[in-house]
Image 1 (cartoon, rainbow, N blue to C red):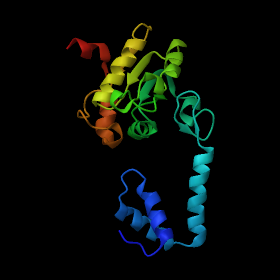
Image 2: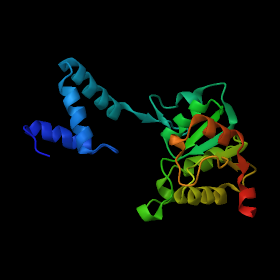
Image 3: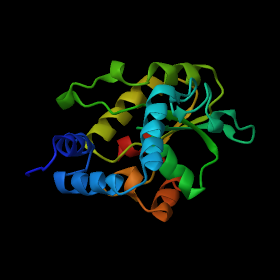
Image 4: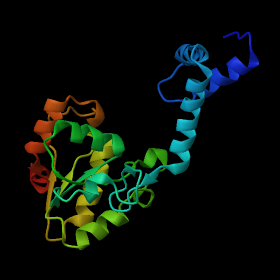
Length: 205
């Protein structure tokens, strides 16, 4: 792609680094910003810088937050006996949109993937064990993507948690293997949460 401006080229290259953004889409976004008022573009840039500098992660669940403890963990009406384990914050948002779950979450910030060099020590698992050991959760829902990495992580967590006096369940397979929770429609995802199954039963089949 030929550019008439070095500044334009640099801006397009930066946008192209974003996931799912090709060079043509990046160019369209940059040209859109160029057509905006200067103060609007400055506000856009300031918002991104503020996000990167000030964003926090909940000390309880690991979800993205503006405060030390996120709004979900701090909410007095959430069911603290239910703990839903997810891969990342996008899955929290997806499940919240179903309005079918009123418990708490635990964000792993990834999945076990030997091919990518990601092991259990790279994930937010130690904090999960601490929360379970506290005795507050009664049921752990392993709501991870139905992929090879998701299943590997579920099996690892099951082995780590099975000796605790706690119920371990997984979401029902309304989501096809290889699919991702964040892209599932709300009805399918909500039904998968409500009709969750005991994980140990899936091992016996």
